[in-house]
Amino acid sequence: MLVPLWAWAAVLGVILLMLAIDLFAHRRAQVIGVREAAVWSAVWLALGLGFGAVVWWAWGAEFAGQYFAGYVIEKSLAVDNVFVFAIIFGYFAVPREYQHRVLFYGVLGALVFRAVFIAAGSVLIASFAWVLYVFGAFLVVTGIRMALHRNDTMDPERSVVLRLFRRLVPVTDTYHGARFLVRQSGRWVATPLLAVLVLVEVTDVVFAVDSIPAIFAVTQQPFLVFTSNAFAILGLRAMYFLLADLMHRFVYLKLGLALVLVWVGVKMLLLELYKIPTGISLAVVATVLATAVTASWLRTRTANATSDTTG
Image (tube, rainbow, N blue to C red; front, top):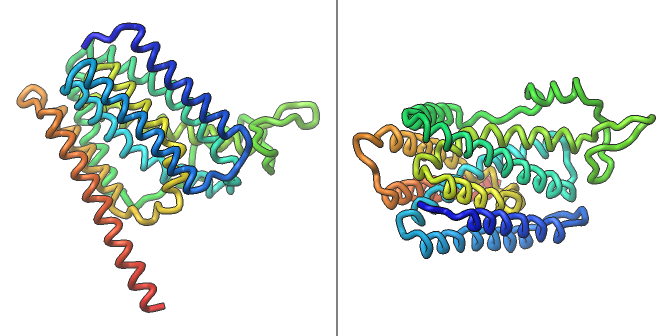
């Protein structure tokens, strides 16, 4: 797959333009409602799918399939980020009107870190082909651990990063609007909002350790790995505001994500024996996720109906 420099530049230009539009649209601190989040989610989804159509037109169905497979995997794993973001925001009691600002810079940092990870991964794979098997084994182990600990929740108070941040950086006790830093007694100090941003960034780096190898399982093309990752991540903010209040309904989603990681890990381990077609891989991922979501909604709907009847 030959990708000219102008194609990379065009993609980066589109990403920066959309980020600028998003920042301008939310330049004032405001609460993002479900309707607005749904509209923005539709915009980001259309952008991601539209780019897949461009890949199909320019490089053919096989590479388009690889892009869509990576996009679906990253988009689904991003839902797990939403779980964690909701816990972090709840722990710090972040006012809803400031949450978009944190997520905007969080996504911006995520794009930079993931670009670095993708570049490093591409160099490693090009230099040492056996790294793919390391990635595959890592994904299988990660998927199994996720399944076994799917009911565990993150406790920000136990975070080593948060404790280290509080030890090294003076932090105010109260929020100062949407500011990350304020000047007090002649020195700059952090607000709790900066602590939240640091925790969000570190959390996303941890998630990237899982998601980047997972996408390398379906394509080793750096352009497709980056673009599928980027266009999925761009919609993370809108996804959070759309799904944050519904997280309790996705009771089987983490198990579904665990099965996806195991599947792509096994696919990577079998590369020398049998290369599973991209279409089959994408179909398996979509089926597992659809089953997990459907089962979750049926389970929670039944539980809600039972509680309403007994109440």
